[in-house]
Image (cartoon, rainbow, N blue to C red; front, side, top):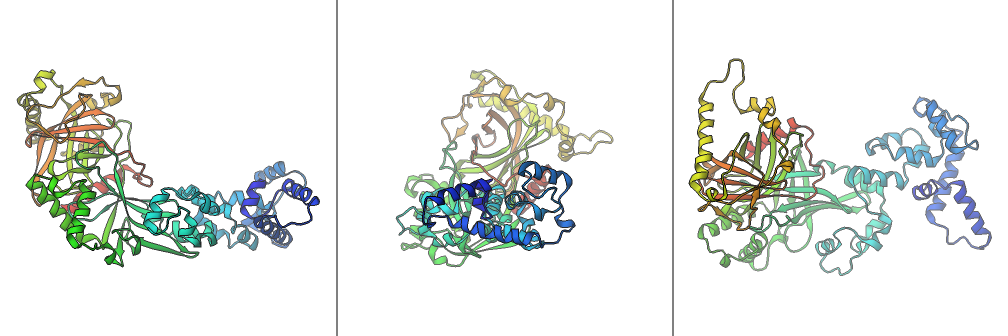
Length: 559
């Protein structure tokens, strides 16, 4: 409690003050006394002098059990059986107040002068910043220890700064406190924390807004370079928000190659916000559009245009650059959620990186809906845009693979999958049983059927040998040679501009808890998917109903 009282500035425990008096007996000067302790003694003196003059009312009355507990822990020297919170010691009030949500503290400060003085302590607001937003940094030690990702911040904040000391980059932090950080930065911008999908036409994207150090940063997540699907995701900062003055937060655009510059954030409506750059000249490069294209191509694909020999792929890349360049000054984002896990799920739902031929790697969200598994695109292409249902897997229709020699025959695989596909089509044409609701939505609401309920988890399945049939193209020559389960499913294909979309049969292959694949029979192509393992806070859906509403909205954005 002595440490707590010293940090918060309210005062010290009796033991701490006794030790201080003993030390002062052998010293003639008190020049080394900590300024926080002096301020704490001053505040405690005021509080004790005014405590007796504060009237007792229902708002500050202490319940019987609480009063008994206070006497137990503080001995008879404290006020016996306190009838009001005003009679509790300041350090105990600090502990109580720091447990309350930050939104309740301003109203608490209106109760009386004593409460208002105690709510000025750093301990309370530091705990709220930590528990509500995960901010672990110590403002008083920033000059010594820096912040997370320090090298990135130094390069991004000001390339001319060589020192990694954060205090040199933002000197005004030494005049701020945790209350400023909470009141003017974390709380006002709390609604933009989480996962978002940028509105970039068919291409979509994945933005993760997090509290990182003393910043709120919007990280754009980019898939690894094609075809390295198992490599970690790449991140690029699009904007950041931080305290510039004690009562003002500054929004900066991070796009371009000249460092951060002025930006703006506007909340359009619930679960939607937009960013705007106020200095787009920072996005331009001295060499003009050609230099910008070469730089973008190296960042996006990890290669030069001369190294891409496929003419159709060159056209797709150039088309994406021209299209996405129109959105470098203003972007709108819509909130997305991660699918909530259920005990009946075949594997942990979440985000996966997948190969899509000449379009490169794209991000897919895998979710489970009763007897079906669905893969929804978060990033897309001119054929099948972001937000569309790229995979639809029927978990009731498991397929038993033949021996390895037969697996190499694409005709044998087609016979297995098309046989199930024809059966599904026949069942779809039959009238539903009397009294039963038709359509896939009724199946999802009904939950898993008997076959899905009896299905063991993927981790309990023994691996089976697997090989791709001859004639099936794969971007990854190295793929798992064993699988756990296979199911019938359909994949969405379409012409350029999402014309003539249709669902084509294929085989869903579950390799392990973090990888799966899909064989597109009509395209004679294989896509490999690998789990995205990055930590994504503030992204869980409040309920399955919210998540399903979000999926329907995503499809309408690009339909």
